[in-house]
Each structure stands twice: as structure tokens, then as C-alpha cells.
Length: 297
Image 1 (tube, rainbow, N blue to C red):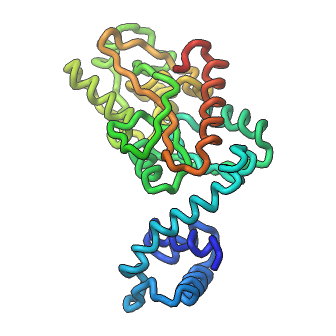
Image 2: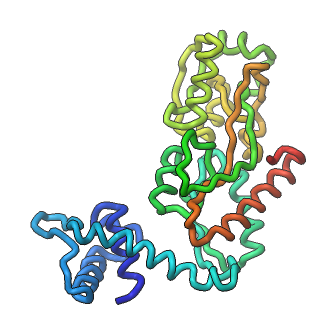
């Protein structure tokens, strides 16, 4: 029996099928089946219900999963616990909201890789609610996201910047009153599934602002591209480390009623790479300070 068999079992549990687990751990469907047969033979038990076309974990298999996770955590942290040295960790799986991936994340990653040249980083872009779920499931080591409205006790939240919501317009818009601009210009909504979209909707509602809907975008970077071509305006965060397109937009303050999103790094308290996540936080903090001194929390 090897630790890889337990990791495959966990992947099946988290992703629901042999084929999905195979894609996740980059092996063939047949290899997953063979690994699980070896695990069952070594334990002399049946872990799957194979009466249907797609094998499913039976009750014994489901009961084994949390024990397998505990074994994997202990295995992954053997050297980490002894040395406290993040260089012993081969890969960091990092989730990130899309608005951070064109500026903040690359610059922070460059700093981190300079410290640990052998580190392999896998970045998973997604919206904050989805990243929170992946952290809770343990499929991500850490995630850069908007502050969750709820935090379980086994999660560790480290905020690093507060981004005030502003009115985003193209340079062609010359007016300065956000309410007048919103009354005249087409409005581009950010998807309501995103934390930023929800904050913008709340501000519009609280201030009784009626907008002329033009389109809805699934990401801030796509929204910024539409605004840059003067297809409309929108309410969004004043991104701390923007890409060139976002940098070229006008950011008009919303006044005393403006709200903000707080970005931070979320991880599990039992994450085997907690010290590496702290190093990541340090590099993110330094990146923000280099771009805007005094802005990082």
C-alpha cells in the first residue's frame, strides 16, 4: 500500500467518479481503477459499489476517506513539521479571483519563486464563493478572494487590502458626478454571483439609483475591456495592482456612501503548507506596498 492510493481515493470522493479523479491527478481512467483494486486487495475489503455503470463509494469506502485524508496530511507534513522549511514543499495550489491574476498574482508569484526556485505553483481562477467551497473541501492550499461572509472555525483568513468601490468609465467620459453619469450612460453589470457584483448591486439599491442595463460580464477584466471601449460604465473595486487596461480607466469616487471589498488569503488551519502560505502573504503584501505605499493592511 502506498500513499498515492489514498490520494486517489480522496480524489474520487471529492470529484465523484473514476474519470473525474483521473483527470484531476493526471492519470488514465484505467489506472485509477487498478489503483483502487490494489487498495481493496491490500485492505481485503470492498470500497465501491460496482452494481451500476459508474462505481460509487460504498459506506465503508466513505468511512475510509477522512482517515485517508488524515494519513495524507501526516505524510505531507513529515519534513515540514521537522524543519519548518517551505522549500520541502513541491507544489502550491492557489485559487485566485480573476481580477488579481493579471497584476497582483504574477508579481507576488515572481517574488515567491525567487525565494523558492524549485516550487511549482498551480493557479486556479474562480469567483470568491467557489474558491471558498474549494478551500473547505481541501482541493486548494490557499485562495486569494473577497472576504467571506461566513468563516468556519477550521479556516484561517488573512486580509491584505481594502479596495474601495468606484465608478469605472472610459477616458472619454468627462463628467465627474457619478450619479449624473449613471443616469446617462449604459451600465455594465458584473455577475451577481461574484462578491463584487453583489456589493455593486447593494450600493445601487441603497442609493436608489436606476441604471440603463447594457450587458453583464462574468469577470472584472472583461468588464474593464468593455468600459475601455466606451460601451458603458460600471461600479467596481479600485484594484490595488491593476493591469494596463484597468489602469487606463477613470475611477470616480462614489462619495460618502461608497463601500469596499476586502481581499485576503484564505486557507485551512490544518493545511500542511501553512508556512508557505504565510510566505505568499508576505510577498502579496510587499507587492501592494511597492505599487501603492501605505495601501496594504
